[in-house]
Length: 89
Image 1 (cartoon, rainbow, N blue to C red):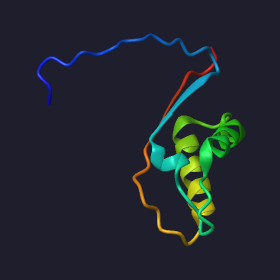
Image 2 (spheres, rainbow, N blue to C red):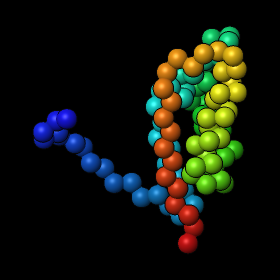
Image 3 (cartoon, rainbow, N blue to C red):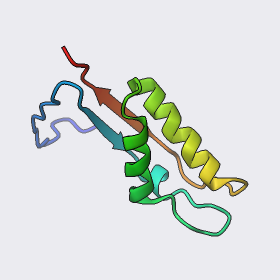
Image 4 (tube, rainbow, N blue to C red):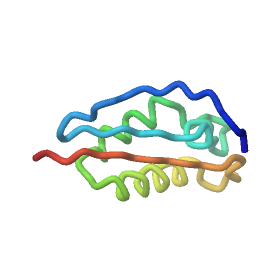
């Protein structure tokens, strides 16, 4: 651990009904048996498809979609997804 790390702090306000997706490169760089990457565009499309679900379900859905895309190819990297969702009032 660093004793006094220098951090750049930013504030983001999630609007009601909005969400934030944070993910490691293991998601978008997952490859299938044809050596095609899952890619940012597939992440975006899947997020649009899943956005009405709860945060935990979105994470699970992204995992399922990426795993299905990879098929029998070995996943080479770790895969971390964090979703923060603000529900409408």
